[in-house]
Length: 101
Image 1 (cartoon, rainbow, N blue to C red):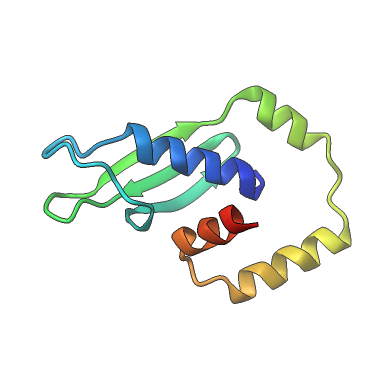
Image 2: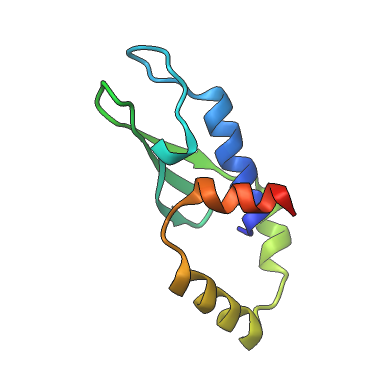
């Protein structure tokens, strides 16, 4: 899953998923990715006044097939290492930077 796909996923969740208790939508800072296994993304959605919601999102097979045909080279690994080394977990800031470009 690349940055654009991750961004689209989080925007979709942010727009469409609301706290089942109070109906408020979740801001980017309240959506936490807890893991990705194959085509399943595990999310924790935090509401300021209620218990967190745990959710799973299944990616379409088309996205997975397209990605699985791409080869990962050493430059990709180095780029990801550099990104993760400096990434503080703030997706809201990351996506704001992407919008500005």
